[in-house]
Structure formats: structure tokens, C-alpha cells
Length: 136
Image 1 (spheres, rainbow, N blue to C red):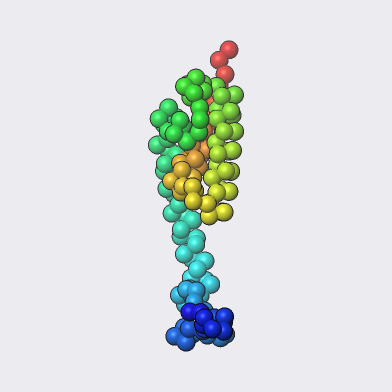
Image 2: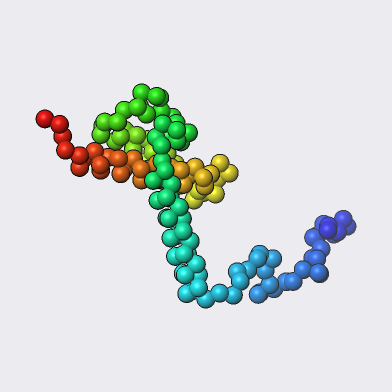
């Protein structure tokens, strides 16, 4: 409230004031070890979900939803085509991470997970192509 005559701001007496009294929410009382255990469990759970999704990855269905590619690029199974797709995915993943760290409104966790799954699947595809025996 403003005091119209003095031009000063009145202090709201109902809110706690002084050191130790904050209006911000505080964390529940947990030890650092418990926080570390929770973070480790969360990391493992997300990692397992990403790995499981990369096994079910279908390039023709999922890739056009993640990055702008044309049908010819999707159909290109050569190692060079896979490397081009990996470069597109890496750039998109970097941008998505940047948005997430910045707290941008357009950040999408599902897109981030999908990009990571596609990266894992395409990397596995490239490794398999390198290991495959070449035709004479």
C-alpha cells in the first residue's frame, strides 16, 4: 500500500521480515547423500527409457518428426547418409539442450528424449555398417 501523503511505501506487517525469513520455498530436509541417490536413480531410469526407445526406432517414421529431412535422405542407408543425419541430429540436440538449460518456453522434454533416441539408433546403424563385411 502507498501512503498518499508521504509518498512512502508501507510495510506489510503480516509477512515475516528479517534474516532467516524468506518468501521463497525451501527444500525439504534431505541429506546430500539422499539427493545423490535420487539423482542417480533418475539418471538410470531416463537412460533406460532412452535406450529402450532407441531399440524401437524406425527411421522413416520418426526422423521426419525430429529434423527437417526429405524422403531421399531418409531412404539413404549409406554410411555417408547416416553421417549426414547424425550431424543434423547433433545440431538439433545441441539446440534443444540449450533451450532446456535456459528454461525457454519452447523446450520440449519429449523432443529432447526423441532426439537422443534417434542419435543412439543412428550411431548403432553406423557402427553396424562399419562392421559388416564388404561385398567384393
